[in-house]
Amino acid sequence: DSGVTQTPKHLITATGQRVTLRCSPRSGDLSVYWYQQSLDQGLQFLIQYYNGEERAKGNILERFSAQQFPDLHSELNLSSLELGDSALYFCASTKGQGSNYGYTFGSGTRLTVV
Amino acid sequence: TQLLEQSPQFLSIQEGENLTVYCNSSSVFSSLQWYRQEPGEGPVLLVTVVTGGEVKKLKRLTFQFGDARKDSSLHITAAQPGDTGLYLCAGGEMNTGFQKLVFGTGTRLLVSP
Image 1 (cartoon, chains in turn blue, red):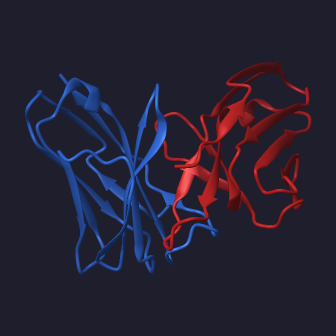
Image 2: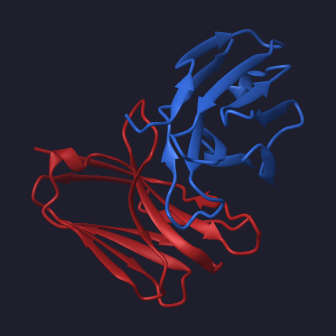
């Protein structure tokens, strides 16, 4: 157990629907990062939050949004889902804002859009 | 966004063989990390290197950060079936105030008994 908790582990939904993925960071970590992993694209950075504030944005679609709450858990909202959104979504956390000390990843949420 | 290319993409070897995985970029990174990912799990950090030319050893694994901080290599000696997995390098981007990791394309390693 890495200490980063992601729920749900699996999600199957239809095109056009909206889903919410949840992440609880490791105790004491203030930064949360969201990544998308698909077979053809590898691990793609979506967005980072630090202590409730958005800090960096990557290749995140406008249909996707995220937030980090006062208790530091984070949610990734995916709307108007398309078949191509099927992927593994990972959350990672770190104590600070930098990347030099390595990320701790959760086990991911496997999203299947049918 | 800086890109990291890994080679080879796939590697299938017998137990006891040695192997090297390469991670290359045209960009400079503030740090370079290596992760291993197993099916159904998230990547797990193996090592972080931050100084150009740095070499770190973890039992049978040797990691090197290039002098110019643009490339890295992972060498495994006497590979074992337990080394099977997806190996990912990741570089810390230098041009942002709040650093994020850029992941490489991955090397899938299969070690057969």
